[in-house]
Length: 434
Ligand code: FNR
Image (cartoon, rainbow, N blue to C red; front, side, top):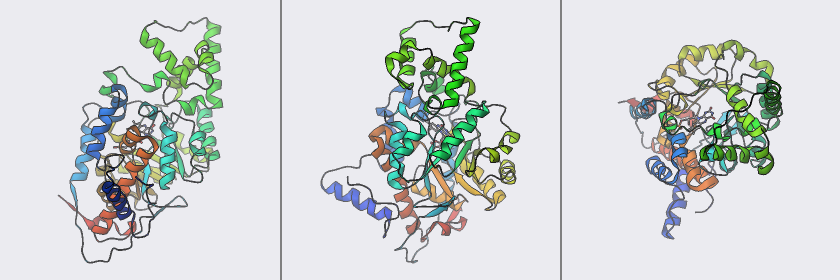
């Protein structure tokens, strides 16, 4: 297939993308990645090793929250209007001083190296090709500077897990400003990892093998913590508790390969292993509270969004605390089994926030119609997680780009076919609860 048109294509991104696909079809070419989520997911599942699939697709507990996320979208129906001249449509939105070509972002997704070796750098390329932001994850497989380096002036945001080490928080925030991130997204819902049976049943946590800790191992403050840990262990005469099994050796090689520097030197050094241990100790702060958040303004000049808000009272408090935006999200159903669906939470939060800050939604966005429904219920934009990860798994940067381009294209067609021509016109009037 040819390069995709830009989402701001005159005459419409959706039609341009359809035309590209149908024209290539005449020559016998099929789209690089399936254009619907069910097929995309099936193909990704077939391709990925068990551990990668478990981490990418798995949810908390029995998966009730993931199912609820989907069911919530199905409870709303779009009621299209006719004869309204929809020949010219504008998908653009303004977020934090930037005009974006579409109200869709790439969600922060950690440990993407499990599904493709180019991981975050490939996703960064994909987002830059579409001109929509990539929210770089704290759990990335490449330092944020490497991702920014392939993005030119394209927009990027940074997602922060608030470490138990404040100096590390400050260092990550400084780096985010240095790569010219447009905003910082503080994820609140993962002060501890949820109970994820698909990973647990395999005894698999990517970070324990050194995968998804590149923001840390590339950080000067974190490296100091690692050296302090090694020095303290030496001083106390503590030896690492290692039982030598084939899997333990593989894990050591995995850690060493992902640690900065040469593999051989790393295999001889205590640092890669100590880095994993240090990471597991400091990556999150279960005691995180509103008092910590109050210090954020002094820590960064960047716009701040809080991700993982699900209760209207928390949303009101966030607005009162002076944040710039909220991401209504249940982490794609990965944290609390039986949690409220993100879309259902949005219907309570949107009136509580009443336009005072930007509202984003994720968890369960699978199509352009889902984007439409989220905007109609009060979101300013959405972020997309698993669809771009599965596109990455199937076809690298181009696959991640196409998976999100397809969602934007379908949104464009849904907008026009519903009788609307801009994002601002997408309101609850276009929906009916079923
Ligand atoms: C995530 N998510 C996530 N969120 C975050 O703030 N930091 C992170 O590092 C990650 N890592 C991560 C890994 C994987 C494999 C997945 C699937 C998700 C959550 C992500 O940002 C987003 O909230 C959900 O993915 C949205 O739900 P959908 O689109 O996957 O249904």
